[in-house]
Image 1 (cartoon, rainbow, N blue to C red):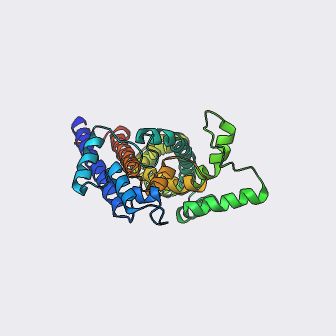
Image 2 (tube, rainbow, N blue to C red; image 1 turned 30 degrees about the horizontal axis):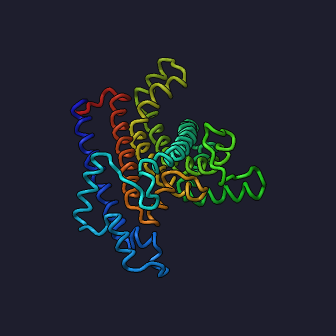
Image 3 (cartoon, one colour; image 1 turned 120 degrees about the vertical axis):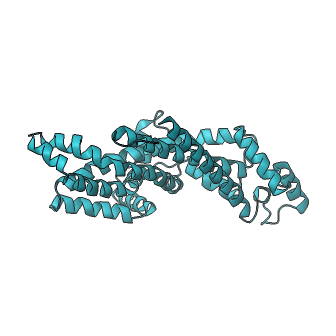
Length: 319
C-alpha cells in the first residue's frame, strides 16, 4: 500500500507540473498582457514607453525561458508573488479571500448531489421497471443533458417570476456570518450544480446495483432469511460502490468546472470568479497559481478515491 501511494503521489506531482506549465504558456498565448490591460493600450491612453516600463515592472520584458524558470522556482518555494492587478496584495491573499466562498459552495453542491444520487440510484434499482424507476431515470437523464447554466437560469427565472425569495448577489455573506442569507444566496447554484454534477452517479449506481443484485451471493443472503435492507446495504451496495467511486472522483472535477460558471452567474467571489477575472486582466501570477491549486485538489481527490478502493473491497490489492 505504501509503495502504491508513493508512486501515485509522484504521478500526481507530474500532473500538477503539467497543469502549471500549461497555464503558464496558455495565458501568454492570448493577445495582450497585464501591462496593456492595466494602462488601456487598446484605448490609446498609454504610450509605448509607459507600456514598456510597466512590462519591465512585471518582469514581462525578460525572455520567456527566464520567466518560466523564475515561475517554476518560485512555485516550488511556494512564493507566488503579488497580483499584477492589485500590486499591494499577494497571490496568497487573493486566493485566501476567494477560497472560502468556493469551499462553501462546493461542499453544498457535493452534499446536495450525493444526497440525491444515492437514494435515486437505489430506488431505481429496487423498483426496476416500475413507475418510480421510469420517473427517476427521466429526471437523471434530464439532469445529465441540461447544462448547469441553463438549469440555474431557469431556476432563477422561476424564483423571480413567483417571488419565492430574494436573490441577494450584493451582500455576499459567509455561512458562519449570516447562515440564512448565505444559504438563500447559494440555494440555486448548489441545487443546479448538485443535480448536474451527480447525474452520472445516479445512473451508474442503478446499473451496478441491478448487476450485483443478480449475483449468487445476494441470492444466498436472501435465502438465509436476512432482511431486505441488510441484503441491499451490506451485500449489494458495498460491492456496487466500486465503479461508482471512480465516477465520484471525476464528478468532483466536474463540480469545480461548473462552479466557475455558477460563481460568475451569481456574483460569488470564489476561485472560479477569480480565474475569469485574472484571465481577462492577464493577471499571470493569480491565474497560474489558481490553476495549480485546482490541479492539486483534483489529483488529491483521485488519490483518495483509489485508496478507498482497497478499504471498501479487501480483495483488491494495491501493488
